[in-house]
Length: 568
Image 1 (cartoon, rainbow, N blue to C red):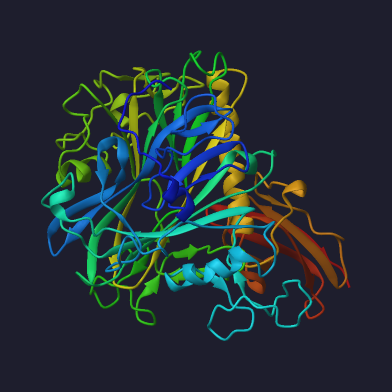
Image 2: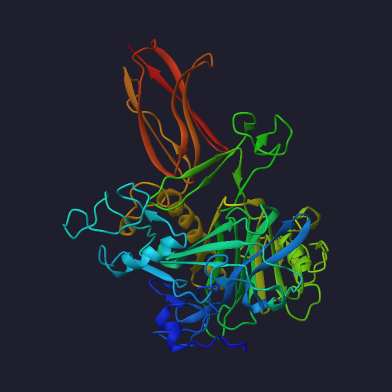
């Protein structure tokens, strides 16, 4: 990577106080700081090939800088802020709202699975908890106290511990109290927003876990400025550099809920096999939408539990130590827009005010124009696809491997924004957003896209299966469900019991019901949220008469029915 930019200087004191850290336990090497900056942090690299800045894969840079953008309305006034270093947007300070940014507690907290039970990192987590971090409350007293209660020097489930995710995890909190006169957008004042950031990785060479960084942004409107922020949009922000900076292309994959960066040939640093880099929404923000996620019986625009009728349910996976939260009447938002920015083009330059940001987050140009895929000069619509039918807000949504659809055909030093919105940020009602940074390398530039797509699918499966309450799968025994399947019951015919098994590649609300030949429902075997995976259940038909019955699995848009025979 050969890019001249302002360099963040690292002092001996900042190393000591851990305001910066390099997460380097698998194939991705990602430096970060305690203000939300990813990659653009100048920390000495233990295996340097090129400098200290940047997120690296295979020793070379794949990401120059990363972060996020937020925008919305406060009492009809548009605001925007974020952490987007390459665009000179740095609106967050270490710590919680109204806290001194220089407080020594405002550091990056690091916990590892290899840390000693009740050791120093577990004790340091006391300060993290005081700032809002999660913890496992083994003795259910509501207080984090990492003490070996039974004196056996081993953690037991009745004892407290940090809420560690992965094999190594960092946690910090930062807030948007940078004064307006010190911001790029000087008319935007702080909104009392805190973000608790978790970055986790697994120490394995096995893909996809070895090629994935998991990032959780917990957005909190503290209510110190305003009780509700409306029409909020969150976006992943990246200035990627796959090796050299000037040969990158972007795309988005709506089926994978992702944006991605790739090359279409050799790179001066990676050679003939440059990697692809996907940024994926693993769990989008929760949003209540009248008429779409619930029927608004009392017509007040809000979901009122017990009054309104839910049409959908959103979920919040908090990690393997915690139960999954459900939100009837809401849904988790998917990717809503994806755009690129590049210098030298007035319509695509870095944003200069909050309106520019809000336009970008809606999939528009900087000044608010809708792109026409039929005439956009840095892309083309290929493979017989009707350009007039291409979604203009999801830039370059085609498949570059097959060369079908809307394809970015102009390489450059690009920046990418991948949005998910709109939602409401109410006071003291956190919104958790999980994203994944996933990198893969194949036998060629375009084969890297294919390889990484597979990693992305599998990373979502792992997230669905393991970031919820239950036993975390051993990464060495990591198995992946890649498709729906409803198996034939066994035995069949049966009397009076039989077993039914099925598998689902995604988490969701599943129902498994049994019907007679007239279509009457005679049994409900499953009616609940389940994670992706394989399942089996026993059906006892001792109260039913001999005959033909049907069992039906419903999981989102997937529905399948099979026949079974009861003989008594």
